[in-house]
Image (tube, rainbow, N blue to C red; front, top):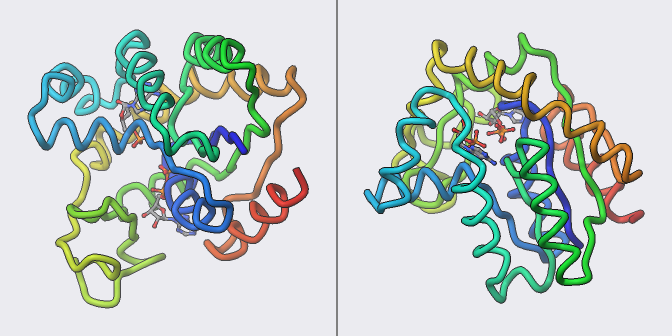
Length: 215
Ligand code: ADP
Ligand code: AMP
């Protein structure tokens, strides 16, 4: 099963991917998580992308596409994957299609999680991430049992640099301009399914599980 998760920043993609991949035995590939890991470890890739992520801008396509192409060649992708945060431009989607075509494969579904912009800002500003395992929490909507400590691995939680309100505006603009057109792109392939992301986390998870089970 090969899924692309679409939706604006804060819609709940990462949260849902964590829950869904276990159920379907596929891997979760978040380009944002990969970039943050590289930035934290000061790798050459991290140094290259830091400036873009800090400003809420998209990383150039050539950097992102080659990173994803490499990741998709790893063995764990053979059982299927859920791409989260990729593709984010039409060009990235075209490149992904080329990679899939070459391997004689195709996407099963482009799953769009929808939410109003007022909700997104509230969710993004309150988001907290685990320094150890990158699990996602929210100070109000999905708090950890112990403040600032990850329930899963016990590491400390932090707020992403780009989750401050000033950067959020830019990220939403980038989404509207460059990523939202992907919904049409995948509509033309007949693989779009939409989920109302304003429901509770468990209700969204149930809707997604129902959609994927019926594929
Ligand atoms: P995305 O990966 O789409 O940017 P996340 O999954 O990181 O979004 O979710 C953004 C924030 O909103 C997180 O703090 C998360 O805990 C919270 N969140 C996710 N889904 C819901 C939901 N259905 N209701 C309330 N809060 C949610
Ligand atoms: P995310 O964790 O998905 O919110 O992504 C965080 C940041 O990483 C984005 O604001 C971009 O700067 C960068 N990024 C993640 N995925 C991509 C992508 N597919 N294309 C370009 N930039 C990306």
